[in-house]
Every structure is written in structure tokens, then in C-alpha cells.
Picture 1: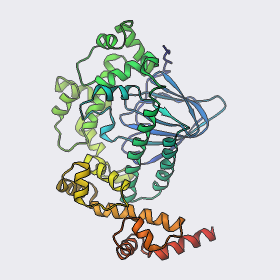
Picture 2 (picture 1 turned 120 degrees about the vertical axis):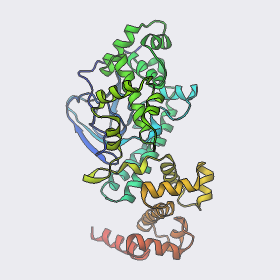
Picture 3 (picture 1 turned 90 degrees about the vertical axis):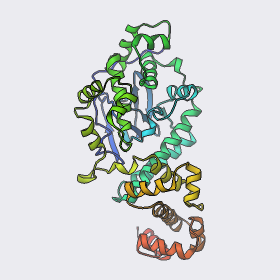
Picture 4 (picture 1 turned 60 degrees about the vertical axis):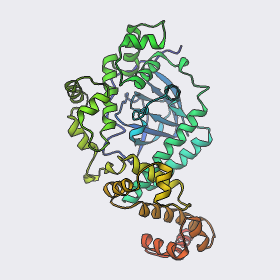
Length: 412
């Protein structure tokens, strides 16, 4: 069994995630060993350059150019650049509520095994890793555009990165096995997938191996996360509670109960202790009003909205109407309309039109396809509809857009 590497200090928060960092690309250069970080949101990391090590709950993973990491809310990360080198990192926060170990559905034993044994760092090789790197580059370009449309597309890109990451991680499950992990990682992942249930350190020890004791569990957690069993369990229950905050109208007593807290007062007391805020204040912070440069996160709090946006993006060239969406995604058409209006102040048709126009822009810029063919390829019902919609978005016709782009290239 691998031994856990010890943390040099207790982990810090709000380094890579938070209301002011959501849907933004962070660029970081690490030249010396960084302090441990444990966040309340998950985040993706792309290694743009350099080499070193990611220490994740006591387990070491090589970090080299082209690697991608997905750090969960249950994981403590320490970034260690190789001596004489530096790590160039691109980081995207990602807190979509269904990601935290399938909290909102019954986890089957098969799914739970896949979660526990999932590798937190992939690459640099791999078809899906290459696609993720391309999405990071597109995300970086979109971050320069300050518009609601850009934010919608960025949230869809993050969803796509998550799907691709899971596909790549699934391919590697045979070479990354639970039994080969250091004890600290085993313990933390077991607690993560059972945190809503009654649990003791002794029970965790029995579940993992008959050879370890309650003292071993506490020591392994202290070494790999900086917390003992009780502290780590409470934190993970709070993480689960916070993910529930993104749903409309759920009362805090219901959230507390479903997150593993038997008594409401225990939930409130520990929430204030760990976050420094009351649950209501924290929820208000999460659902920012978008002022002072902060991202308005209400746009992604609805499962129906984010699922529909992802579907529109992935099928923009196809015929799509309300009936198609409701059939494919098993959602109510009326609910979808209401939530698009409430969360985005627009309709699914306008979002779809924007996706199609952006795709058409790429074809106009990089190909010699006739405008009529581009309108069909982009999913428009006619070239007249295409031209009118394109002009509404860009202020010029498709032909003028192509001419301006090509002149710009020549001048460049």
C-alpha cells in the first residue's frame, strides 16, 4: 500500500473558487511549493507548461504540460513544482450541483465504485484530453467577451469538459484501482460517498480493511487532509448542503436532514463555524446579483436550464423544437420556458440562434462554403432566416462578415 504524503499546514479556502471566480479563467504560475487548498466548489486545472506534482489527499500525481485535473470538493490539493521549474496553470471553477458524488440521485454500487476509483489527473495523452484542451482555449477566448451570451456558452463548455473528463477517466479505471491508493485517499473517498448516512471512524475502518483501526483512520485523515474524522465528515456534509442551496425554495431544515445532520442546531452551528456565515447569508452570496464584476450564478442553478443549454449546443445543426427537447430531456416545456425567462431573461430559441450564429461565423471565417450551404449546416430553416438573424447579432450580413474577417487577416 502507498504511504500518504503529509500536509505541511491546514488547507485554505477561496483560492480557486468563489462567487467572484465563477465562469472566469484564472491563470496561475507556481514557482514554489503551494499551501494546501480545499474548496467548497470543484474546479478543473489545465497544465499549460512546466512540470511538478499534484498532491491530492495524500496521493501524488505527476503534473506535466497537457495534463488535466478535476479537483473535487472532497479533495485537498497541494501544488508542488519540480525543483528549478515552474507550473503554468489555467483554472476554471465548476460547481454544477449534480457533480458532488451524485448527491441528488440514489447511487448504485457500480456507480459508487466508479466514483471512488476515478483518477483525479488525466493526460497528457488521450483523445478526450486533447478535446478538453481545445475547450479550455475556446473558454479563454470567450472570457474576453463580457456578455450574457458568452456566459451561457462558457457554462456549456464546462459541462462538456466534465463529460469528456469522465469518459477519459473511465478508460483508465483498470490501471487506477482503489486497493492501490494510500490509506488517506481511501478513507476520504469512502466518507465522501457515505457522508449522508450515520457513520463512525470504527465503521469506516471495518469497511475499508479488517487490518486497520479507528486510530489509523483518524491518523490517515490528519496526514492527508489536515482534519480528523469528525471534522472531515462535518465538512463533507456541509458541502452536500451547499450544493442543495442552488435549488429553488428548499428549506434549511430539509437540507440539513438530507445532508446527514440529525439536529438542525448542529447544522447551523457547524455551518457558521466552517464558513463564517449563516446558511442564508452564504446562499445570498452564492446567488450573486452580478454587481461589482461578479458572475450572476442564478443562470446555472436550474438542472433544466443547464441540460437544455448543453443539448442545444451539441445539436445546433439539427431541427430542434419544444417537443424535441421535452422528449429528449424528459422535462416540461412550460417549466423550461419559465426557467429560461427567470434565469436568463431570454428563450431557448434565442440561445439556440446564438449558438448557430457563432458556428456560422467559424464557417464563414475558415471555409469557402457558399452562404446558402452555411445556413443549412448551421441549422437554419432558410438562408433568409439565417441572414436576418446573423445581421441582428453582428450588425452586418454574412457576406460582409466574411469580407471583413478576410481583410482583417490580410492586414494582420
